[in-house]
Amino acid sequence: MKSSLSPIKRQRCCTQLLHPYDHSGITASFLKSFSSSLGSTSRHALPQIRCTSSSSSSSSSSSLLKDSTFVPPSNNWPACRKDQSSSRTSLSSPSSSSSIHTNHFSTATNNNDTSSSSSSSPFPHLRPPNIKDVHIFQKIMNYRPGSVITTLGKQEGIEDEDEDILKRYNVDWTHRYQGNSSLLLRPQTTNELSQILSHCHKNYIGIVPQGGNTSLVGGSTPISNTEIILSLEKFNTIHSFDTDNGIVTVDAGVILSTLQSTISERYGYLIPIDIGSKGSCQIGGNVSTNAGGQYYYRFGSLHANVLGVEVVTAKGDVLDLMSCNRKDNTGYDLKHLFIGAEGTLGIITKIALSCPKLPTSRQAALLQCPTFNDVRTTLSTAKEKLGEILSAFEFMDYEVVSLVQQQQQQTVLIEEEDDESDNPFFLLVETQGSNSEHDREKMEQFLECCMEDGFV
Ligand SMILES: Cc1cc2nc3c(=O)[nH]c(=O)nc-3n(C[C@H](O)[C@H](O)[C@H](O)COP(=O)(O)OP(=O)(O)OC[C@H]3O[C@@H](n4cnc5c(N)ncnc54)[C@H](O)[C@@H]3O)c2cc1C
Image (cartoon, rainbow, N blue to C red; front, side, top):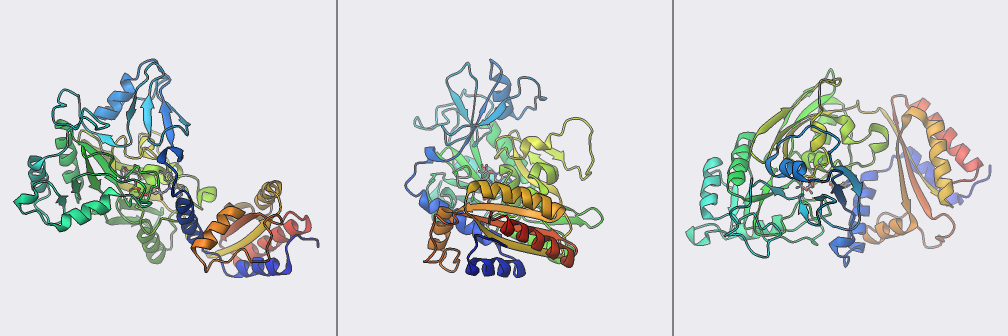
């Protein structure tokens, strides 16, 4: 059997096979390393999405954003494409040179009143919240302690510690994006949220919804003092689990890792998303960014697994799209508009998610390939030899692994004597199934084939 693996690497490969690897640790380290390696990079160099309207007029798109008026999809529906030129989501018409920043939630209906907004604000039609608004929000949330955090009206006895709390919510996880909002709201019910948005809508006040604040691209932090930070953290109940169908109904603010452990320990099911930020990010944030992660290969995107959502629109209307039917082919499937919308079309408050059974057999192998072509061949071999049990296929290059290792010294994948030019591509292959003997046999056949053919 010819193989490009050194004896040490072969041994490591077998060890990983016996003791499944914690991928999410790698992903977390990867994210940390990645963000620190970008330390001096401006936000304009980061990946973004720009939506471009295919129609000559942007009016339908604008009304959708400002009024949350739902326009049925038509030929005028904006088409999305990846664009590296702007760090913020924007929607523009080819006929217009201006673009509307949309990943911050504009709840206002028109731009008549600009008197009190800051002239340097990127949202000139919005006004900053004032102490009168604060009193209204306090009333909406029954003066519940911690529900309104503000530096407005400090002289009226607002706690000093509010300033420290606000600072934390104004900065993102990477510390690259810093806002200066003076008001944080933490509603607890859909009704409270609806009243808050309705008030903001009528008074030209902007909102930025915030989940776990891990999005890495500044989407969850304010960029001016005209925005209120609206945290979803108090929406933190796991409502029910349907054991016949494997469907969980959960509040948007539940932390992903809490949801994962509850569903696996209590019911023996798996949440079909797992990402490095799982200890902080919220399921509502995951749905709003259509986050992927290591199970993407096996279970598909959240578009495939979210069965229903409850959403509060900019006007404060509550949309109940909480269908729990796996097969529901009646009319438009509006929930998909909110998956990946990053809060631009409404705030997600509740989610129904389809969950697969927890696997009883799980294996992982860490491989190294000499060329990228070998990576591709390994993928097609994995599909052929592992078939239905292949659950994850993650690729990392030498530079990424070195960065992880620098940040997290206990992760030793590259040893001193290793030469980058030998095997610069790392692969993490995982299987999940229900028969360990059968799955193990398949994994061994796959590894043998890869080594015999010399592409690992
Ligand atoms: C487009 C995108 C894709 C990503 N994909 C991945 C991935 O595949 N794998 C990975 O490991 N990490 C990914 N990340 C990084 C990050 O860990 C995830 O985005 C995570 O899902 C964010 O969750 P969060 O609760 O921290 O949301 P936040 O960072 O707080 O918010 C993210 C965005 O969603 C909005 N938002 C948050 N909650 C709600 C809500 N309830 N209703 C409406 N809008 C809301 C915010 O305004 C913001 O625009 C991605 C980030 C982005 C921006």
